[in-house]
Image (tube, rainbow, N blue to C red; front, side, top):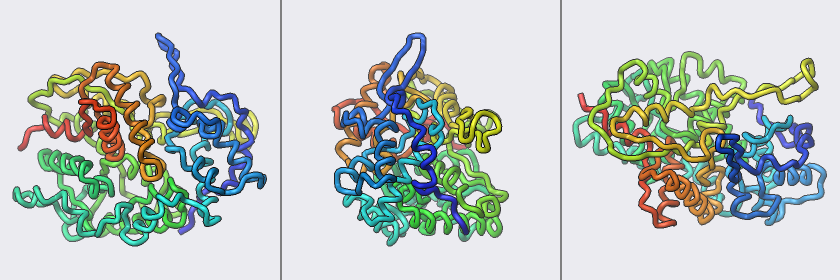
Length: 439
């Protein structure tokens, strides 16, 4: 199986397209009222120009390519002080716009290839991927701990390796191993039971999607995990009747939907299988009248857009051969696959909920601060940044913040604790599970 993962050298044409104009630093909204708040978590925290959005990071890429910069401790710290959120990409209007996050990750891949990256604090994480097939140093048997309440209630969840089902619930490592985030797969499975869905999980046979390895620059580990997953998904389709893979993890969804297509065998392996995030899956059921909502939640709620199912799903149009403008010209972007409206529509549909919007939202959303290996490499900064996002939520008068990502859920909760806020953090499925009646 061949993979088309770019090297830094492959992107050099676009690296030199940056004019250092600084547009990437701010989330612009022309309103009314017009606003401009910072979009880059690293730039907000560290100030140093090299940490500031694509403008600074691309200067590093140029230095690495021309040999004027070496992978010393200072440069490595700066390369990994980036959540790979894509906020700068959403602001840029020059030809390198479609490739900005890829350039960031390509620098990390080059550091890993040189034996310099990732950071020392990431080493346990990468070793865990190789030893346990998850980044949490968790034995396989712990992957199903969250399912115990269902067994006790006489509603065991199918092991899809043993019992066929049309729907695979791909849980993800954070939902399975993080104590706080386990509320998300629990609520998801509860909802699926209430809706009478025929679904199963991989349990101990589930592997990490590889997103963590990809974001850290470990392309070989990503390819190992992704290849095994693609082979497994094909087998499940052929032998167990799986036609739909649903995940409540934004990172997993992004990896399978966007990173796996870099495989030459993707179309063959995924033929007949649809990958969908729970937000989209439940929204479609709601549109079909198959998601009954009863009772009510009397609360004011705002919504945080996870980067992985928001702007990371942009589709860019580039003049590849120069037939329209010039070779490599950026022509436009489609947000059709970005999951911006579906979670909001579901929240608004919950009886009693008053939905309010934060100033930075959708493509201009401010990252929670946990992605790109930052939570592991710079934990204090990740929580501090999440506190800034919680504060923005408080400015709306909301009592709760919803999201659709286990990683965001955990980091935002840490941020709320850090600023001693009573803001409640929920995943969308936790709220829906409270108002969907049992059959």
